[in-house]
Length: 252
Image 1 (cartoon, rainbow, N blue to C red):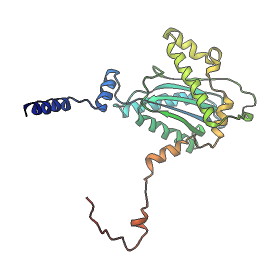
Image 2 (image 1 turned 45 degrees about the horizontal axis):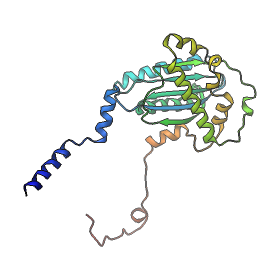
Image 3 (image 1 turned 60 degrees about the horizontal axis):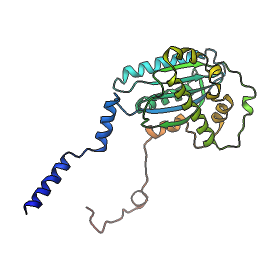
Image 4 (image 1 turned 90 degrees about the vertical axis):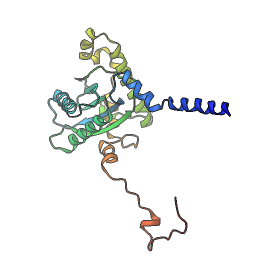
């Protein structure tokens, strides 16, 4: 009898000190000085005709992220890289999920408004709970790279494979920039097309993906609909049948 009571007491002690998975994740985040989980968001967009000052796109996002940070002070800071080509942009954003959603809203607003700069946009990926950031800060660069016969680009590969190859390029670019000493980083950023041309997405690929309607590419509006539109389910047994079915047995 005594041994059974001792065993029960030991089990209760173990139960009292059992650590949950949530506590493990929170401890890990505190050790990394993270307020929230960090996600990586990558999208591409096609510029509207007549966009003259492409640097203003980068300036817009500098102001936009600064304002977001002032409003959402408990959220994570935004890091990443915006590449502005002649007719397209590629944008990597690393931050918390609420700021990613606000960024998607801004993209859609840019498409809807007549004064916006985006004609269309596609979300390539949102990687949740990334182990670490690739970028120490957010920055942008305009790339004056001429692309011959960009509209004629075609591929026998699936859209999934093209997207994976493009994301692989961007991850390699981020790793390369992360390993570059800070003293040399600005010079490298100012000459990306000369130093690391193989790590920059091709403009023909960007045009192809922006025009493609493959379901693996999510439009900003589709993403926002998941948050804004109610999820209504019509129950055939209760909403389309009259009179209502009688419950013969009680349910706990």
